[in-house]
Amino acid sequence: MTALLDAGRPETTGDGTTAAPRTRRRGTIRDRFPGLALPALIWYAVFMIGPVVAMFVIAFLSWPGMLTTPTPAGLDNFARVFADETFWTATANSAIQIVVGLPIMIGLAFLLAFYVVQKPRGHRVLRYLLFIPALISAPATAMVFYAMLNPDGLVNGFLRPLGLEGNEWLADPTTALGAIIAVELWSGIGYSAVLIASRLDGVESELVQAARLDGAGDWRLAWRMYWPIAQDFIGVVAMLQFLSMLFNSAQTVLLLTQGGPENATTTLAYLIYRKAFVETDLGYSQAVGVVLFVIGLLGMWAIRRTLRATH
Amino acid sequence: MAQRTALPLRDRIGSITSGTLAWIYAALLVIPFYYFIVSSFKTNEEIFESPLAWPTTFDLSNFTTAIQQADLGLAVANSALTTVAALVLTLLLALPASFALARARGRAGKIVESVFALGFLIPSFAALFPTFLLAAALGLFHTRTFVVFLLPATALPLSIVILTSFMRTIPRELEEAASMDGASSLQVLRQVYLPICVPGIATVLLLNFLSFWNAYLYPLILIGPDTAQRTIQVALPTLKVDAGTDYGVLMAGTLFTLLPVYLVYTVLQRQMQRALLSGAVKG
Image (cartoon, rainbow over all chains, first blue to last red; front, top):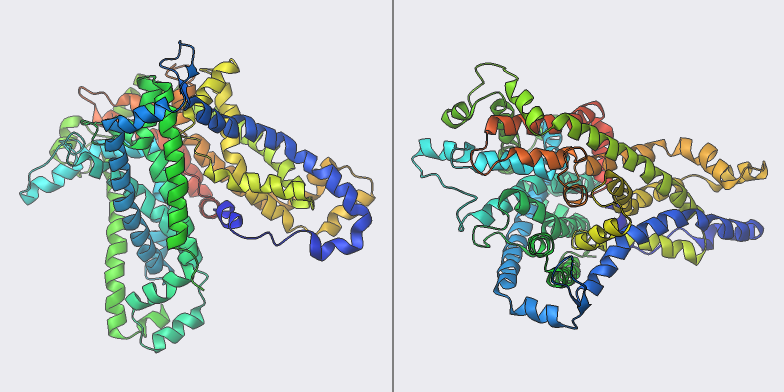
């Protein structure tokens, strides 16, 4: 979180202000200290940056299986990816997931955060509950939803007494993607809400009081006052959830549906996984990785533009 | 409370709408919990018949079956070992680095810092396959060791950003006084900075505890299915069987997996919430 905020902000601490009286010591401190950052930097380069660089290399190799020797392939992998119907299905699924899921998640999280910072009765309990999804691992969440969404599970158990027909939510191509998005929303809304609430807590109460005296209701107060003040921060939360949906949701897909039925839940991130570890079409897999990387950057740019600070 | 009751009626109606929304979501958070906790004491028939009914007996047989069937005891030990080792390694790497970056005034320091600050851009998930190749190249494929090496790398950007901002608040005079007395930079780090940074270190530890304990795809791909090495998150889904899952056993296993996290959350609720607010890396 702080990383994102700091990244977008010019450095404020540094030379200028305090350096002048200590010119003599400054040289030695500067020369001596960054060395201690080297182990972390090397570690990070080897385990994080290295694999990403390798992804860009492998995307341009023909590598049809672990035991074969890779050969240069130029843009062949990309040509294959773009000619593949499965890729376009996956792109559509990822797009639906983001375009439907993200605005709902951020909108509801904002309203929840707004409610919580008004300190209504029970707000402490609410804050405690909102943290729950952030504590639970992807496998545990997936297992609970697997139990709830199975044909004899809780959801159908609720619907049947109401006279509604149950459904095999995860096995039905028309509802499977919706179910995956529901799991994402369930786990994402609470955490986004507490993050946004931490920002809304800082809104001055005099301002709010003044607006209240002018007769502003909750709805106007929320969208006309709190939202603009917190907009850039909400943008940061939206970016985080966007990346999480784009990449990490593959875990949920893997655990619940393995991309099925009939590719209905195959997202781009899951396609990377499947091509690499199930079908061992490594060049293809990493070419999709490069595409997803670009989509990630473009999406973050778009979110930043939409929700940048309004001054 | 006092000022709330003084509000005009229509504002209270407005709150009631947003309040309804909030409590519906709260119910959606609580009901799955209730459901899976009671289910872990029931048989499949009981779960299907009356999903929300209170269990008739608090029979622990689902738990013993889950623990035996998926070797959960060993898996918890593996998870604990991996998590603790990775946490220690994270601090060993992040503390000196943050110290250096907080004190550096040159351009190099700023560049290094922005490398870490932009770490969230790294799509480590997309690069899972090259990471797997790296494990093979180091001869550490299918070992917990590689995951212990890898997890700190995933945690470094956020840990360093948090710790650096903490260390920036420490006045330089303190450090200079120590340096005058002939202390080396590591001594300054240990004796001056560490004691003051304890809250920052606690934040980093809690945050990374959550993400390491909950890690799934890395351990799945890199440690693999070997029961002697696999972590709890990899072991849990093996209780889900395509033909005829015993839901009671599955839910008992899930509950067992969540216990350590809930224990920590209950004891350290305030610190944990603060940690989660300052970081946003999720499993």
